[in-house]
Length: 392
Image (cartoon, rainbow, N blue to C red; front, top):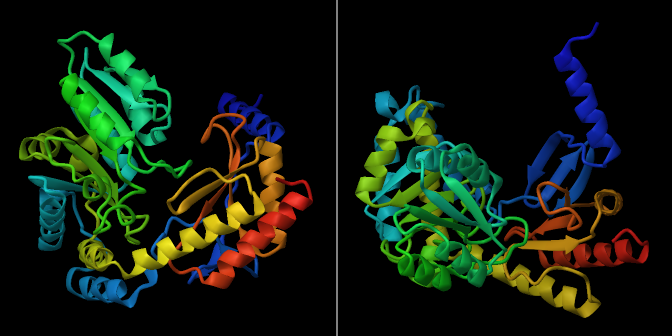
């Protein structure tokens, strides 16, 4: 008789396969300057979140090397033991100053930061009012907390208002949204959410994972783009693994919030800190983002791609960010479309349910500052050929 767990594994994987929802991994043999090599074949890479190409920039790599030489490859301990170095402190202080927040706390990943916030902050009788398309890390964190979770239709402020009006006035309420949504590439109605939070005495939290480095005159995300004070948006979460090109994440807010998380967030207390070398490189990357060279190139690529989409009437959602979703509508169809593009030398991610709502399966095209004009043109041509073949 086989083990019940083994039976469960086989049944679940068979079910995923039958629904065209089985996830598999590819081994990247090389990945540089917008080109991905898999199984000996090179592809134009339109699937990376490295929106600015900074993870290969020598001005980021050199501080990393210096940090490795000075501090070693890892931090050696949790932040509350000996893992919090002067490099971490400098990065936190820089972010706090630039974002206009009293304090910042670093985490190993955005998933950990969102989970930590929910685990530490949310208690019984609290209420979370979240955008329907909020990232899974936050939704799962809210669901396993003792708080009540209510989700409003995507970017629907009127629906959010209705949910808030039904909440007991004595309940502590957190409103949560992404700055730039990771699968649709659109932005949140931030000013309206700020007003809504203030009207209902709620706390607003923005997940700026895909906005940091891209939005705002200085590339510092929603806070920069909308001029948000700490009172407007008391909690900001951002990550370094996308546009910043390193790894890790942070939460920014009041000193009381950060001190509270230091004492209650298990994902912070019991995790080894990111390396000091990574913190040093991250600060160098953020300084380049503020300078703006890569952001200008990215915006040029977005404009070129959007013009091509309009010229050929391609069914790409109306996004003005680096994330450009091409809706296919079925899991089987999006896998076929992705495979066809790879045959043409273009690598694009196939995103299926439950990552996106069923029936909105899509190619998630991501643009980067490292792409050349000819790369964008090749992508447009490939999408047109794909459509002609009936795969999209």
